[in-house]
Image (cartoon, rainbow, N blue to C red; front, side):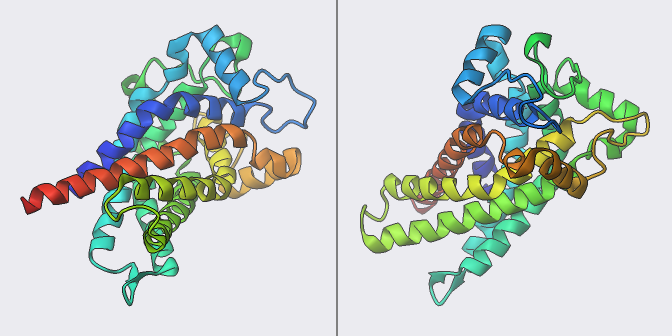
Amino acid sequence: MDFMLSGAAACGACLFTNPLEVVKTRMQLQGELKIRGSYQVYYRNVFHAFYTIGKVDGLAGLQKGLVPGLVYQFFMNGVRLGSFAIIESSGYIHTEGRVSAAKTTLAGAMAGVVGAVMGSPVYLVKTHLQSQSTSSIAVGHQHKHQGMTKALAAIYKQHGILGLWRGSSAAVPRVSVGSAAQLCTFSSAKELVLDLQVFPKNSWFVALTAGMISSVVVVVAMTPFDVVSTRLYNQPVDHLGKGQLYKGFTDCFSKTLKKESMMGLYKGLGASYFRIGPHTILSLFFWDELRKMYQHQKLR
């Protein structure tokens, strides 16, 4: 049940934040491996990107990749948050009744690794679909898939089972860092809010406030890994399935840093917060509330 509730919570958040995921993906691919000022800027900021995509690709363009996005959230966060919930209920993350930052970080990272490996094939397809657009505003490589199922089948047919896990070398550090930052700060912030007695113990404001605090830390820690992950997943590959732009995580990180400076690794930071921030807040809020409702039902 922990896995089901966690997956449902993440899917609920995804319905609201998927358009921002599309915007974030496009902004991270814009000007890939090019010096600032040497490429055409289609998306000036998150609001301009939102308007441009809606105008050129239509409202449906803002929900590209929604199906694989929901599938990814259900399985990845179902496994990640579900695993963490089991670890938490076992008492592992507490030391003498208080949340241990070190133990929570380790548990969050471990849960993130499992979730990232599980969800990598669907995340690959989601990135491909979200980067696809009308040629007049296209950024990054255009894979031209016709939907999630056909994309998975085409990748498997061309590159085999390992081709479906292409880019997972970036997904694992991305999700493990994000998961560790998210769950550590959420657990600690929840405890702090309860200690300060700002809200009643069972108030939904406790989880909401903790989620807001966690969202800021997650975005700062996760964005460089997110940029690298997006680029590795979306890069074109040769007939052997090898990337034509990057050899792997380290190569992508160093090339982006060399060509685009540190700003390249934080490209689309505003879009990242508008997407990851609300998603963190909503998923953790839904997760906490669903678990409380389930526990209340069990006690009746």
